[in-house]
Length: 265
Length: 313
Ligand SMILES: Nc1ncnc2c1ncn2[C@@H]1O[C@H](COP(=O)(O)OP(=O)(O)OP(=O)(O)O)[C@@H](O)[C@H]1O
Ligand SMILES: [Mg+2]
Image (tube, rainbow over all chains, first blue to last red; front, side, top):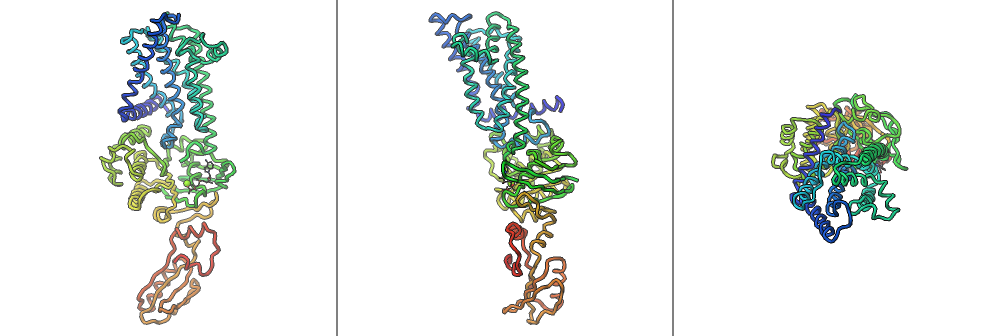
């Protein structure tokens, strides 16, 4: 398939997904409001802590936590969109008709993830604007720091494919991984510095790439540059994740094709 | 050759779903797959549609191996089942437009209206959300989705399940029309024998993962029920004077009716003609079993007795 064909399909998914979102009018409004409420709550919490003497965090706790949740949310959505796509189509009964197009399954799966990216992007812009102009919390957003954020998003997509593959064989995996992924926000320094975790837990933190994504974003905000170390880790994690993701997805789909679990109509 | 299946075997855990089946479907042919629940019809369709890998054997769609070149096969094939769904929150147009984009079809709207007219789906139906569609409407839209895509090969796995008699008749008539106009190659599975008899030029009967019979529906009926009965009465009550190697019994009933038990085949017509030639007949009928009766008998594996012919009368 050529790039033009791919964009054609990507466009189809984008339109479909936005039409679906728009059809739930109240949900649509909630989808827009949620990040605003979310960022406001944490901005106010951070401010209160800072006014009470702060936590000795560079740049202040309000900034710390706002950057944390904006980055986290961006990455999280990428992970869930890429891990959920196949199961979701199977669940609602549209999988077969998507599968029967003469392309590899990665085409619709990645198109779904990219379509979800547009939501991440929208929410990111909202949260950034509210933080910057309502609460005066500046993220010092630059093109490199934005590209770094996109890199962080890319780095979890491969891991999403791992779950996407396993979920075809074992439905319950989704629930298990939701909990595991949820726990990452405590390890990776979303709400509080990794250094405040028990020593043993800090080893776990260091093993999760998202920790470096958050560190990179914060350094960029406070010092105007992104540590090369963090960029490299993101790139390596992204590549490793993508390789593992594609291999797992391939093996799981192959097994599903053998066991008759790919399409159970 | 449209479709070629060579010695396909498939086992799930400890269920032997297919025990080496082979058949061929010519280009433009409508081929029926019949068989009791669990016989392996869906398994066969899924293997041909590249949704399932066989353990053994090979299958080709217009020469493309479904295991080695699944994308080529998928480019030629579409599948319609009664379980197919759409996006509930999108309306008919939006759904078909989405799939048309995937299939890279531009004139989807025109086709949609054309086939919609044929099936009795109006523009206002297309503007409804799928959540508000009835089963039949959804299935019609599913057929339209396929028509928009225009694959030369189509698998229909119990497509009329859940349709009311009027709708399934419309569905069938559209199918028939399309098959004739567009020369599609079709594999059709159904439990509705009437439907199979009406649509299929050739059928195969699957039983326990094996093909037990193939041929045109009429021939199969004759094989399973090799006897027919002609019942008539002469106005003047005379006796029939007829001898034929195909007739094996003639019975005169109390009420003046005569029953002629005869082997199935073209000669039934000759015998009827002969009866009409011999005298004025007040009534005459030939009892034919339906494909359904043939199927039930075949599935039931009963030994045929001489009086068997009456069991379906
Ligand atoms: N994914 C699967 N896992 C385990 N067993 C399966 C699977 N798919 C089919 N089978 C088994 O294979 C056999 C054939 O099933 P299949 O669905 O092909 O039958 P069928 O002829 O389509 O029946 P029906 O008329 O009820 O649709 C059945 O015994 C079924 O239980
Ligand atoms: Mg079936």
